[in-house]
Image (cartoon, rainbow, N blue to C red; front, side):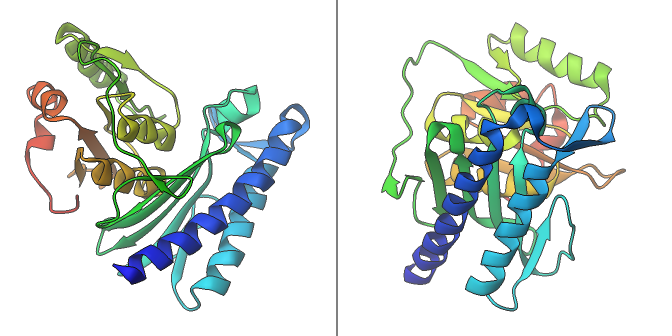
Length: 262
C-alpha cells in the first residue's frame, strides 16, 4: 500500500503542474492554436504542450515505464501510463469549465491508478487500488445530496451508432433517470465518483478517456465494468450504482458479462 500511495502522490504532483500549465492556455482559449483531427474532433496547442509536460515528468519519476498519450501515441504493453491531456477539448475551446486532465496507470488491461484534474475548479481527484477516493490529497467520501433525484451521464463519440445511442438514452429516461452528456468522460466519471451522478455509461470510448476516472469511480464504491465491442475491439465502460446498472442491463445486454477488466 505504501508503494501505491507514493506512486499516486508523484502522479498527482505531475498532474497538478499540468493543470497549472493548462489554465494558462485556457485563459487565452480564444486564441489558442487549433486544428481539426476530424469532424468535431479538435487538437489544440494546449493538448500537445500538456501531454509533452506530463510525458517528461513521468519519464523522470518512473524511468523505463511505458507511456501512451492521446496526441503522440505509444505502445500498450503489459503495464503503462496513459494520458488524456485535455479531455473535453471542445468544451475547453468554447470556454466551458467542464474539461479535465486524465492520467491512468493500466496493468494487464485493468486501470489500477488514476488522477483526474478539473483545473478550473481547482480540484485534483486521485485513487489507486485500496486508497479510497482523494480530492486535493484528502479522503473524500461519496455522498448523494438527494436520494430521490436519479441522474446519470452518457458519453458520446463520433463513432456512435446514433440510433443505438438514442435507444439507450430513451430507455434510461423512461426508467426514470435524468440523462446528462458533458462530452468529457473524465469529468463525468468524477461526478459519478463524487455522488453528483449515479454513474456514467459510454458505449464507444478509449482507454485514455477512461483509465483515470474508472479508478476514481471504483474506489468511491461504484461498480465499474470495462469491456470491448467484439467486432470493433473498441472499449466501453459502465460505471454506476447497482440500481443504475440493473436498469441499464436490459437496454445494453453486453454489460452483463464481466470481462475481468474492471
